[in-house]
Image 1 (cartoon, rainbow, N blue to C red):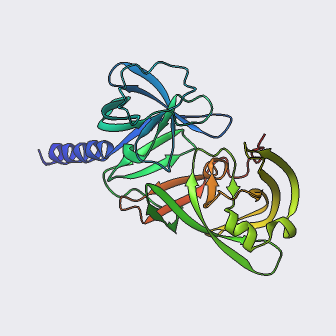
Image 2 (image 1 turned 180 degrees about the vertical axis):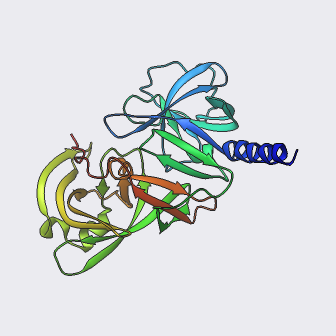
Length: 284
């Protein structure tokens, strides 16, 4: 009888351990964006791009699938929507209309899916994992994070010209297909246009004839935690218009790690993914 009881307890412990986490499958596009298949309001099947820098959802003006059951008010906001993926359901999800999204996406969905929970972005197995308790962290290293206005910020060291490290704060931005994009302030203060090897440049003009110049360059070293990238492609803006107020840690860099974000959003844990040494994404 004692043996049967012990086996039952072991089985029960294993069962509850299994139930302590849930998964959401995703696919990664060739542009490094994460796509989740969803059903919205039990009617509209939509492919939504995961945007780590937002909370709720939005619809793209270029969507391929119909979203007739998401009703917007005159401010182009829709509240009280139901989002389902697999056997998971979220209620009272807000959607905004006519926001640009990534390739192959009908819109975006944010971290509302993981509100109040520890979650993992597992690029090795193409899935999110939602935890009810602290997961196993062996092999991961911690990063201090700042969670502000629905966005995560981390800091990293940048070796520009061999004269010491320049620390920069980056917003995690899964909608930007590239890797590192510097803010105007960081680019100007550190004279990136002079000190880095420039590999490409594009000039765009707005309706007032003002220039928006994007430049691609090579950064000698980029250090995140104790992991170092050498000769990494980076981008920054130049010209008369200076609108890039935040540096981005984009999707091409995000995919190089497996991420676990704790429930209070103060710490992220990382370890290299199978994409860690993959070729860098080339911006068009």
